[in-house]
Length: 309
View 1 (cartoon, helix red, strand yellow):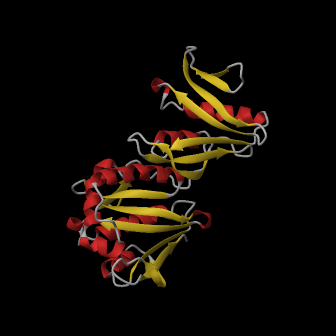
View 2: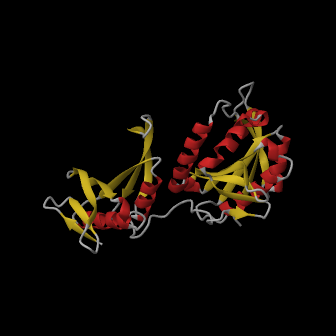
View 3: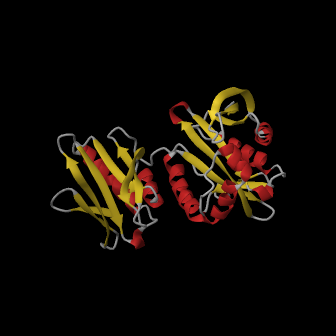
């Protein structure tokens, strides 16, 4: 693969070994005064999944820095997981989210992610805060936690509409399967930018989804994450929530960016408090008015945590 510049010096054709043009990289919205530019790339379908886009973007970024640029930006639609992976592989770091900055495929508004690369950034892929779990997920033989799939949407809707979930987690009861599918797609982006790792809990014996479990980076700069979990009403009473919480916590404690994992439950939520204890968390104290309560005053919460040894 090679890059062939056009006379303007700001557009490169991506050429494969047969001298066929398979894509284009462009520096646009160039701000000479501030030495910044936006990088955009596109490749033909036949050239995808071969690191053509990421390698080309990295090469043009290096050229830009050698010619005095001090900041290169890239933008991806929130649902464009392939675009996020390309940016990361090209050495770009997620920086911010522009809310409702683009028109989505359904005509609605969608968020846009801002990525940046600076001259001092090392070569190679950018560091991710949340690595992908093993391809087969993480299991203890009874339950499995794995990244969420759109096919899990009906399970999540049933969890959200459950009366106990409504009581303790204040989830909207009118969520639809379509809404759940959208949130699952957005969850894949959360994982890539280091915002949260969203797992589906699966019953190993049947292979049926039975809940969800999330590790969210609440304060990334301080290495503090938070754990949340839900189990479908039909699967309660088997210890699945505690097993899933322990698996997610054990995985989180292997992530270099996480040094402390917190979890909390309302003081009166005895079932969730038992889950937290069985999952190996240490009780630390009560946080007053920590949880919202649509039926009255805010709820006090028991705070527990696991800390990397």
